[in-house]
Length: 276
Image (cartoon, rainbow, N blue to C red; front, side, top):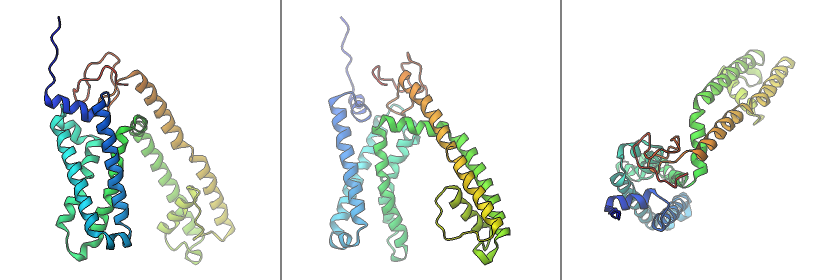
């Protein structure tokens, strides 16, 4: 008769925090999602002047309450993770750290002349909503697809920057300061607005030659707008096939493992037999 495997407290905490295959794990995730949403609501209310003036103390205490909760969660994740370094340097590890740092950093900037920095730190707390991504398998697939396509996207953006620089320089030469194209950067701004099909209309070409260049810029914008979509779509299909056939690591969220793999190839965490 096989002996029953005794689970250590650290392993149990890991299974609850990083796993979703147990009632306790699902309950933890639900409570954490609710906490994240409430903390984001508190940050939004803190940005409203009337609420900030009326409930300044309450909002301050609520913010520190959520900060302590997320700090405790972050430390516990490091404690129970089989590979703490892999978790700390992972995307979600960085997000978890970014969710608590602004509140602590604000302690070192109390001067009234640094209100802009304090306001920035308050706004940065809204990025706690990114913690919700780790509870969506589809979001993980999309993020991995964008990561795999990063080189193609970089080459595409670099090519677009070359085009808008050329078009912007042409418009500066053709139209000149008299029609609002006071510099090459100003012309590049117009080219970016035109290529992206936004078209603010604050700067418009007036000469026939300038309008011809503008028409070519618009057509170029429509021609290239589908390129990044195709790149992401191709990588997305690849990741979806890999996700169906592979197994996801609960520690570092990687899924490029062999079907019969028992341990993560990146951080060494034991793979859940039912993880997909």
